[in-house]
Length: 421
Figure 1 (tube, rainbow, N blue to C red):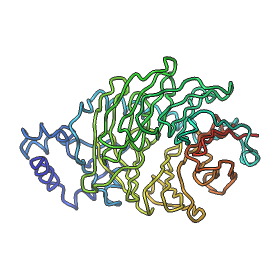
Figure 2: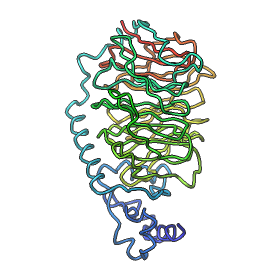
Figure 3: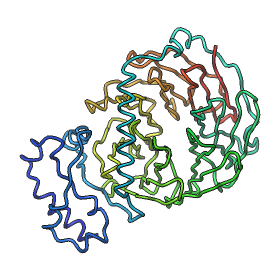
Protein backbone atom coordinates (compact mmCIF):
# COMPACT_ATOMS: atom_id res chain seq x y z
CA UNK A 1 0.00 0.00 0.00
CA UNK A 2 2.87 2.39 0.78
CA UNK A 3 4.28 1.77 -2.71
CA UNK A 4 0.86 2.37 -4.22
CA UNK A 5 0.58 5.71 -2.44
CA UNK A 6 4.08 6.66 -3.63
CA UNK A 7 3.11 5.86 -7.22
CA UNK A 8 -0.02 7.96 -6.86
CA UNK A 9 1.92 10.92 -5.55
CA UNK A 10 4.43 10.68 -8.40
CA UNK A 11 1.69 10.41 -11.01
CA UNK A 12 -0.19 13.35 -9.53
CA UNK A 13 2.96 15.47 -9.43
CA UNK A 14 3.06 15.47 -13.23
CA UNK A 15 -0.24 17.38 -13.27
CA UNK A 16 0.65 20.96 -12.42
CA UNK A 17 -2.22 23.22 -11.30
CA UNK A 18 -1.98 25.29 -14.47
CA UNK A 19 -2.37 22.35 -16.82
CA UNK A 20 -5.05 20.48 -14.86
CA UNK A 21 -7.24 23.53 -14.40
CA UNK A 22 -7.13 24.53 -18.06
CA UNK A 23 -7.42 21.18 -19.80
CA UNK A 24 -10.89 20.12 -21.02
CA UNK A 25 -12.58 17.11 -19.44
CA UNK A 26 -11.37 14.79 -22.21
CA UNK A 27 -7.74 15.61 -21.33
CA UNK A 28 -8.00 15.08 -17.60
CA UNK A 29 -5.52 12.39 -16.64
CA UNK A 30 -6.34 10.10 -13.78
CA UNK A 31 -4.52 7.12 -12.39
CA UNK A 32 -4.88 4.02 -14.53
CA UNK A 33 -7.47 1.39 -13.83
CA UNK A 34 -4.75 -1.20 -13.39
CA UNK A 35 -2.97 0.92 -10.82
CA UNK A 36 -5.98 0.41 -8.57
CA UNK A 37 -4.88 -3.19 -8.14
CA UNK A 38 -2.23 -3.14 -5.37
CA UNK A 39 -0.63 -6.37 -6.44
CA UNK A 40 0.08 -4.93 -9.90
CA UNK A 41 1.46 -1.68 -8.60
CA UNK A 42 4.25 -3.58 -6.90
CA UNK A 43 5.64 -4.40 -10.33
CA UNK A 44 5.23 -0.93 -11.77
CA UNK A 45 7.76 1.87 -11.75
CA UNK A 46 6.66 5.54 -11.71
CA UNK A 47 7.60 6.09 -15.36
CA UNK A 48 5.15 3.39 -16.42
CA UNK A 49 2.32 4.93 -14.45
CA UNK A 50 2.04 7.93 -16.76
CA UNK A 51 2.20 5.69 -19.84
CA UNK A 52 -0.82 3.77 -18.61
CA UNK A 53 -3.00 6.76 -17.80
CA UNK A 54 -6.30 7.01 -19.65
CA UNK A 55 -8.82 9.71 -20.49
CA UNK A 56 -12.24 10.46 -19.10
CA UNK A 57 -15.02 10.30 -21.67
CA UNK A 58 -16.98 13.43 -22.55
CA UNK A 59 -19.61 12.50 -20.02
CA UNK A 60 -17.03 13.22 -17.33
CA UNK A 61 -17.36 16.99 -17.62
CA UNK A 62 -19.33 16.67 -14.41
CA UNK A 63 -16.46 14.78 -12.83
CA UNK A 64 -13.84 17.26 -14.05
CA UNK A 65 -15.70 20.30 -12.82
CA UNK A 66 -16.60 18.60 -9.54
CA UNK A 67 -13.04 17.52 -8.89
CA UNK A 68 -11.73 21.04 -8.86
CA UNK A 69 -14.73 23.06 -7.71
CA UNK A 70 -15.95 20.82 -4.93
CA UNK A 71 -12.67 19.84 -3.36
CA UNK A 72 -13.14 16.14 -4.09
CA UNK A 73 -9.81 15.15 -5.54
CA UNK A 74 -11.15 12.90 -8.26
CA UNK A 75 -8.54 10.42 -7.08
CA UNK A 76 -8.98 6.69 -6.61
CA UNK A 77 -9.74 5.82 -3.02
CA UNK A 78 -8.43 2.74 -1.23
CA UNK A 79 -9.73 -0.22 -3.24
CA UNK A 80 -10.09 -3.64 -1.69
CA UNK A 81 -8.75 -6.27 -4.11
CA UNK A 82 -11.76 -8.12 -5.52
CA UNK A 83 -12.69 -9.93 -8.74
CA UNK A 84 -12.23 -6.71 -10.69
CA UNK A 85 -14.04 -4.49 -13.17
CA UNK A 86 -13.15 -6.12 -16.47
CA UNK A 87 -13.14 -4.12 -19.75
CA UNK A 88 -16.20 -6.15 -20.78
CA UNK A 89 -18.14 -5.04 -17.69
CA UNK A 90 -17.12 -1.41 -18.15
CA UNK A 91 -18.18 -1.53 -21.81
CA UNK A 92 -21.51 -3.02 -20.76
CA UNK A 93 -22.07 -0.16 -18.31
CA UNK A 94 -21.16 2.42 -20.97
CA UNK A 95 -23.42 0.83 -23.61
CA UNK A 96 -26.39 0.84 -21.23
CA UNK A 97 -25.78 4.47 -20.31
CA UNK A 98 -25.70 5.42 -23.99
CA UNK A 99 -29.03 3.71 -24.61
CA UNK A 100 -30.64 5.33 -21.57
CA UNK A 101 -29.37 8.78 -22.52
CA UNK A 102 -30.73 8.38 -26.05
CA UNK A 103 -34.13 7.29 -24.73
CA UNK A 104 -34.22 10.20 -22.30
CA UNK A 105 -33.46 12.68 -25.10
CA UNK A 106 -36.28 11.22 -27.21
CA UNK A 107 -38.72 11.73 -24.37
CA UNK A 108 -37.45 15.26 -23.94
CA UNK A 109 -39.34 17.40 -21.47
CA UNK A 110 -42.74 16.02 -22.37
CA UNK A 111 -44.77 14.69 -19.47
CA UNK A 112 -46.68 11.43 -20.09
CA UNK A 113 -50.34 12.07 -20.96
CA UNK A 114 -51.37 9.40 -18.46
CA UNK A 115 -49.57 11.10 -15.57
CA UNK A 116 -51.93 12.14 -12.78
CA UNK A 117 -52.21 15.92 -12.65
CA UNK A 118 -51.35 17.83 -9.48
CA UNK A 119 -54.97 18.91 -8.92
CA UNK A 120 -56.06 15.25 -8.95
CA UNK A 121 -53.11 14.09 -6.86
CA UNK A 122 -54.11 16.60 -4.19
CA UNK A 123 -57.42 14.72 -3.83
CA UNK A 124 -55.79 11.36 -3.00
CA UNK A 125 -56.91 9.61 0.16
CA UNK A 126 -56.13 6.31 1.84
CA UNK A 127 -57.96 3.50 0.02
CA UNK A 128 -56.39 0.40 1.63
CA UNK A 129 -54.32 -0.58 4.65
CA UNK A 130 -52.74 -3.95 5.44
CA UNK A 131 -51.18 -4.77 8.81
CA UNK A 132 -50.71 -8.54 8.58
CA UNK A 133 -47.60 -8.79 6.41
CA UNK A 134 -45.03 -8.89 9.22
CA UNK A 135 -44.84 -10.15 12.78
CA UNK A 136 -46.84 -8.34 15.46
CA UNK A 137 -44.35 -9.35 18.15
CA UNK A 138 -41.48 -7.54 16.40
CA UNK A 139 -43.42 -4.71 14.74
CA UNK A 140 -42.25 -2.52 11.92
CA UNK A 141 -41.86 -2.47 8.15
CA UNK A 142 -38.48 -0.85 7.48
CA UNK A 143 -38.42 -0.63 3.68
CA UNK A 144 -40.49 -1.25 0.57
CA UNK A 145 -40.39 -1.36 -3.22
CA UNK A 146 -42.78 -2.00 -6.10
CA UNK A 147 -42.18 -4.36 -9.00
CA UNK A 148 -41.47 -1.99 -11.95
CA UNK A 149 -43.12 -4.30 -14.48
CA UNK A 150 -46.18 -5.03 -12.31
CA UNK A 151 -46.85 -2.44 -9.62
CA UNK A 152 -49.48 -4.71 -8.07
CA UNK A 153 -46.56 -6.60 -6.55
CA UNK A 154 -45.19 -4.97 -3.42
CA UNK A 155 -41.98 -5.91 -1.63
CA UNK A 156 -41.39 -5.17 2.06
CA UNK A 157 -38.63 -5.81 4.60
CA UNK A 158 -39.41 -6.06 8.28
CA UNK A 159 -38.00 -5.79 11.78
CA UNK A 160 -39.01 -9.47 12.04
CA UNK A 161 -36.09 -10.37 9.69
CA UNK A 162 -38.48 -11.37 6.90
CA UNK A 163 -38.90 -10.24 3.30
CA UNK A 164 -42.50 -10.31 2.07
CA UNK A 165 -43.96 -10.13 -1.45
CA UNK A 166 -47.57 -8.91 -1.42
CA UNK A 167 -50.15 -8.77 -4.21
CA UNK A 168 -52.00 -5.44 -4.00
CA UNK A 169 -54.81 -6.46 -6.32
CA UNK A 170 -55.48 -9.86 -4.75
CA UNK A 171 -54.70 -8.51 -1.28
CA UNK A 172 -52.66 -11.54 -0.33
CA UNK A 173 -49.09 -12.53 0.47
CA UNK A 174 -47.29 -14.21 -2.44
CA UNK A 175 -44.12 -15.17 -0.56
CA UNK A 176 -42.49 -14.83 2.85
CA UNK A 177 -38.73 -15.11 2.48
CA UNK A 178 -36.73 -16.08 5.56
CA UNK A 179 -32.96 -16.20 5.98
CA UNK A 180 -31.66 -12.92 7.40
CA UNK A 181 -30.54 -13.10 11.02
CA UNK A 182 -31.31 -9.45 11.72
CA UNK A 183 -33.92 -6.92 10.56
CA UNK A 184 -34.25 -6.18 6.84
CA UNK A 185 -33.50 -2.54 6.02
CA UNK A 186 -33.32 -2.41 2.19
CA UNK A 187 -35.29 -4.22 -0.52
CA UNK A 188 -35.39 -4.05 -4.33
CA UNK A 189 -37.66 -5.75 -6.86
CA UNK A 190 -35.93 -6.75 -10.11
CA UNK A 191 -37.58 -5.01 -13.10
CA UNK A 192 -37.77 -8.01 -15.42
CA UNK A 193 -37.18 -11.17 -13.37
CA UNK A 194 -39.07 -12.86 -10.56
CA UNK A 195 -36.19 -11.98 -8.27
CA UNK A 196 -35.88 -9.64 -5.30
CA UNK A 197 -32.95 -8.37 -3.23
CA UNK A 198 -32.60 -7.53 0.44
CA UNK A 199 -29.96 -6.18 2.80
CA UNK A 200 -29.59 -6.26 6.54
CA UNK A 201 -27.44 -5.28 9.53
CA UNK A 202 -26.44 -8.98 9.53
CA UNK A 203 -23.90 -7.72 6.89
CA UNK A 204 -25.36 -9.79 4.03
CA UNK A 205 -27.20 -9.07 0.80
CA UNK A 206 -29.59 -11.82 -0.29
CA UNK A 207 -30.97 -12.63 -3.72
CA UNK A 208 -34.33 -14.40 -3.63
CA UNK A 209 -36.50 -16.28 -6.12
CA UNK A 210 -40.10 -15.14 -5.68
CA UNK A 211 -41.53 -18.14 -7.54
CA UNK A 212 -39.32 -20.61 -5.69
CA UNK A 213 -39.68 -18.81 -2.38
CA UNK A 214 -36.01 -19.40 -1.57
CA UNK A 215 -32.67 -17.63 -1.31
CA UNK A 216 -30.60 -18.25 -4.44
CA UNK A 217 -27.53 -16.15 -3.62
CA UNK A 218 -25.87 -14.56 -0.61
CA UNK A 219 -23.55 -11.65 -1.40
CA UNK A 220 -20.99 -11.11 1.36
CA UNK A 221 -19.61 -7.73 0.35
CA UNK A 222 -19.36 -6.14 3.78
CA UNK A 223 -18.02 -6.59 7.30
CA UNK A 224 -20.73 -4.57 9.03
CA UNK A 225 -24.37 -3.47 8.58
CA UNK A 226 -25.43 -2.99 4.96
CA UNK A 227 -27.08 0.44 4.91
CA UNK A 228 -27.99 0.97 1.27
CA UNK A 229 -28.83 -1.02 -1.85
CA UNK A 230 -29.34 0.06 -5.47
CA UNK A 231 -29.77 -2.02 -8.64
CA UNK A 232 -27.86 -0.98 -11.75
CA UNK A 233 -29.92 -0.22 -14.87
CA UNK A 234 -28.55 -3.37 -16.58
CA UNK A 235 -30.28 -5.42 -13.89
CA UNK A 236 -27.07 -7.40 -13.43
CA UNK A 237 -25.21 -5.56 -10.67
CA UNK A 238 -25.88 -4.29 -7.17
CA UNK A 239 -24.43 -1.24 -5.45
CA UNK A 240 -24.29 -1.46 -1.68
CA UNK A 241 -23.11 0.77 1.16
CA UNK A 242 -22.16 -0.17 4.68
CA UNK A 243 -21.18 0.94 8.14
CA UNK A 244 -17.80 -0.67 7.33
CA UNK A 245 -17.16 2.58 5.36
CA UNK A 246 -17.09 0.81 1.97
CA UNK A 247 -19.34 0.81 -1.04
CA UNK A 248 -19.33 -2.35 -3.14
CA UNK A 249 -20.35 -3.29 -6.69
CA UNK A 250 -21.39 -6.94 -7.01
CA UNK A 251 -22.55 -9.38 -9.69
CA UNK A 252 -26.02 -10.70 -8.83
CA UNK A 253 -25.59 -13.89 -10.86
CA UNK A 254 -22.36 -15.08 -9.26
CA UNK A 255 -22.59 -13.25 -5.94
CA UNK A 256 -19.03 -12.04 -6.53
CA UNK A 257 -17.90 -8.63 -5.35
CA UNK A 258 -16.36 -6.94 -8.40
CA UNK A 259 -14.97 -3.92 -6.58
CA UNK A 260 -15.11 -2.46 -3.10
CA UNK A 261 -13.97 1.09 -2.28
CA UNK A 262 -13.63 3.36 0.74
CA UNK A 263 -12.65 6.97 1.24
CA UNK A 264 -9.85 6.23 3.66
CA UNK A 265 -9.25 9.90 4.44
CA UNK A 266 -12.86 10.41 5.54
CA UNK A 267 -13.00 7.26 7.66
CA UNK A 268 -16.75 7.41 8.16
CA UNK A 269 -19.69 5.00 7.83
CA UNK A 270 -21.87 5.14 4.71
CA UNK A 271 -25.59 5.43 5.41
CA UNK A 272 -27.24 5.07 1.98
CA UNK A 273 -26.47 4.62 -1.73
CA UNK A 274 -28.29 5.24 -4.99
CA UNK A 275 -27.44 4.95 -8.69
CA UNK A 276 -27.89 7.91 -10.99
CA UNK A 277 -30.36 6.94 -13.77
CA UNK A 278 -27.58 6.44 -16.35
CA UNK A 279 -25.69 4.07 -14.03
CA UNK A 280 -22.25 5.64 -14.56
CA UNK A 281 -22.27 7.71 -11.40
CA UNK A 282 -23.94 7.22 -8.03
CA UNK A 283 -24.36 8.93 -4.70
CA UNK A 284 -23.69 7.86 -1.13
CA UNK A 285 -24.67 9.47 2.14
CA UNK A 286 -22.41 9.45 5.17
CA UNK A 287 -22.79 9.42 8.94
CA UNK A 288 -21.09 12.83 9.09
CA UNK A 289 -23.70 14.59 6.89
CA UNK A 290 -21.84 14.47 3.54
CA UNK A 291 -23.23 13.47 0.16
CA UNK A 292 -20.55 12.02 -2.10
CA UNK A 293 -20.87 11.54 -5.86
CA UNK A 294 -18.79 8.73 -7.35
CA UNK A 295 -17.66 7.74 -10.85
CA UNK A 296 -18.28 3.99 -11.05
CA UNK A 297 -15.90 3.19 -13.92
CA UNK A 298 -12.96 4.93 -12.28
CA UNK A 299 -14.03 4.23 -8.69
CA UNK A 300 -13.37 7.86 -7.76
CA UNK A 301 -15.12 10.37 -5.55
CA UNK A 302 -15.79 13.26 -7.97
CA UNK A 303 -17.92 15.64 -5.92
CA UNK A 304 -18.96 16.27 -2.33
CA UNK A 305 -22.10 18.13 -1.31
CA UNK A 306 -21.89 19.57 2.21
CA UNK A 307 -24.75 21.40 3.91
CA UNK A 308 -26.70 18.90 5.97
CA UNK A 309 -26.11 18.30 9.65
CA UNK A 310 -26.45 14.82 11.12
CA UNK A 311 -26.32 11.49 9.28
CA UNK A 312 -27.77 11.42 5.75
CA UNK A 313 -30.84 9.17 5.83
CA UNK A 314 -32.00 9.06 2.21
CA UNK A 315 -31.00 10.17 -1.31
CA UNK A 316 -32.90 10.02 -4.60
CA UNK A 317 -32.06 11.01 -8.18
CA UNK A 318 -34.76 12.39 -10.48
CA UNK A 319 -35.50 10.40 -13.63
CA UNK A 320 -33.99 13.03 -15.93
CA UNK A 321 -30.75 12.81 -13.95
CA UNK A 322 -30.60 16.56 -13.29
CA UNK A 323 -31.64 16.64 -9.66
CA UNK A 324 -30.63 14.90 -6.46
CA UNK A 325 -32.84 15.02 -3.36
CA UNK A 326 -31.26 14.34 0.02
CA UNK A 327 -32.56 14.05 3.56
CA UNK A 328 -30.74 13.93 6.89
CA UNK A 329 -31.33 14.12 10.61
CA UNK A 330 -31.68 17.90 10.42
CA UNK A 331 -35.39 18.07 9.53
CA UNK A 332 -34.76 19.21 5.98
CA UNK A 333 -34.73 18.02 2.38
CA UNK A 334 -32.14 19.53 0.06
CA UNK A 335 -32.32 19.64 -3.74
CA UNK A 336 -29.09 19.70 -5.73
CA UNK A 337 -28.54 20.61 -9.38
CA UNK A 338 -26.05 18.08 -10.78
CA UNK A 339 -25.29 20.30 -13.77
CA UNK A 340 -24.31 23.30 -11.66
CA UNK A 341 -23.20 21.22 -8.67
CA UNK A 342 -25.01 23.31 -6.12
CA UNK A 343 -27.86 23.24 -3.63
CA UNK A 344 -30.65 25.30 -5.20
CA UNK A 345 -33.50 24.54 -2.78
CA UNK A 346 -33.86 23.53 0.86
CA UNK A 347 -37.25 22.41 2.12
CA UNK A 348 -37.32 23.13 5.85
CA UNK A 349 -39.64 20.69 7.60
CA UNK A 350 -41.17 20.87 11.08
CA UNK A 351 -38.84 20.80 14.05
CA UNK A 352 -37.76 17.24 14.85
CA UNK A 353 -39.21 15.97 11.56
CA UNK A 354 -37.47 12.70 10.69
CA UNK A 355 -36.81 12.07 6.98
CA UNK A 356 -36.68 8.34 6.28
CA UNK A 357 -37.60 7.97 2.61
CA UNK A 358 -37.36 10.06 -0.57
CA UNK A 359 -38.65 9.02 -3.97
CA UNK A 360 -39.39 10.72 -7.31
CA UNK A 361 -42.15 9.37 -9.54
CA UNK A 362 -41.01 7.82 -12.83
CA UNK A 363 -41.57 11.03 -14.77
CA UNK A 364 -39.65 13.18 -12.28
CA UNK A 365 -42.71 15.41 -11.79
CA UNK A 366 -43.33 14.64 -8.11
CA UNK A 367 -41.14 14.08 -5.06
CA UNK A 368 -42.52 12.18 -2.07
CA UNK A 369 -41.03 12.60 1.40
CA UNK A 370 -41.71 10.04 4.12
CA UNK A 371 -40.84 10.05 7.80
CA UNK A 372 -42.85 11.78 10.51
CA UNK A 373 -45.64 11.94 7.92
CA UNK A 374 -46.00 11.81 4.11
CA UNK A 375 -45.62 14.88 1.90
CA UNK A 376 -45.66 15.12 -1.88
CA UNK A 377 -44.13 18.08 -3.70
CA UNK A 378 -44.43 19.11 -7.32
CA UNK A 379 -40.96 19.49 -8.79
CA UNK A 380 -39.62 22.82 -10.12
CA UNK A 381 -42.20 24.70 -8.05
CA UNK A 382 -41.35 22.59 -4.98
CA UNK A 383 -44.75 23.34 -3.50
CA UNK A 384 -46.57 20.78 -1.36
CA UNK A 385 -49.57 19.16 -3.06
CA UNK A 386 -50.34 16.39 -0.60
CA UNK A 387 -49.92 15.55 3.08
CA UNK A 388 -50.89 12.35 4.86
CA UNK A 389 -50.57 11.44 8.53
CA UNK A 390 -52.41 8.11 8.45
CA UNK A 391 -49.51 6.07 9.89
CA UNK A 392 -49.25 5.88 13.68
CA UNK A 393 -45.48 5.39 13.46
CA UNK A 394 -42.61 6.63 11.31
CA UNK A 395 -43.03 6.18 7.55
CA UNK A 396 -40.03 4.18 6.33
CA UNK A 397 -40.82 3.54 2.67
CA UNK A 398 -42.67 5.18 -0.23
CA UNK A 399 -43.31 4.27 -3.86
CA UNK A 400 -45.37 5.67 -6.73
CA UNK A 401 -47.46 3.48 -9.00
CA UNK A 402 -47.29 3.87 -12.79
CA UNK A 403 -47.89 7.50 -13.79
CA UNK A 404 -48.49 8.27 -10.09
CA UNK A 405 -51.86 6.49 -10.33
CA UNK A 406 -51.39 5.58 -6.68
CA UNK A 407 -48.96 6.12 -3.83
CA UNK A 408 -47.92 3.39 -1.41
CA UNK A 409 -46.29 3.67 2.01
CA UNK A 410 -44.96 1.42 4.76
CA UNK A 411 -44.16 2.22 8.34
CA UNK A 412 -43.14 1.27 11.82
CA UNK A 413 -46.80 0.74 12.70
CA UNK A 414 -46.49 -2.51 10.67
CA UNK A 415 -48.90 -1.31 8.01
CA UNK A 416 -48.72 -1.08 4.23
CA UNK A 417 -51.02 1.63 2.89
CA UNK A 418 -52.24 2.73 -0.53
CA UNK A 419 -53.57 6.15 -1.57
CA UNK A 420 -55.43 7.16 -4.72
CA UNK A 421 -58.61 8.87 -5.92
